[in-house]
Length: 174
Image (cartoon, rainbow, N blue to C red; front, side):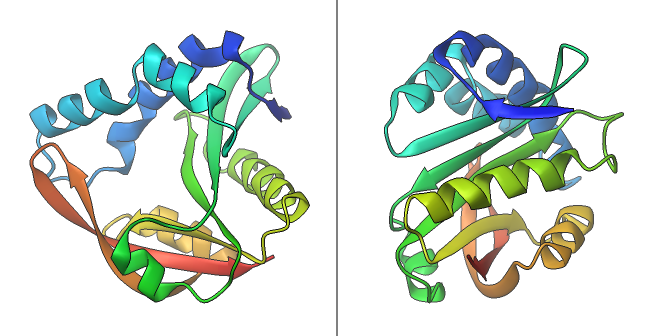
């Protein structure tokens, strides 16, 4: 398995992975319509074209035997969400905005490798900390982030469709 920086040529692949894996992170009460609306607003190829062109974003792609199996997105800079800004304590900071791995590859160390790449990139950019938001009901993700050194420091809301979900804000020192 290899983790590399994603390029503009990867926009379609990233869009496909994001669209396929985002529903896995949603609580069971999230409607199919809300998930579809979120995907259509955030995970189109044009969305990833923009993310990849943004100098404050770094995207990583995990591949195994030529197959794209996961990705992560790092956003450099201070949070704009007031609840997050009030929760985090380490500055400058970066957000681990996305971390998704295809089913069938969970538990194989891909998420660890993607987080490690994001941490290294944030350190290289001079960040003192990294934060993320994760749904309070996503027990698997919360356990992974806790094991990875991200401690819960606050709460925030996350809009999916027309409904707000409750997220933990987690932070770790770099």
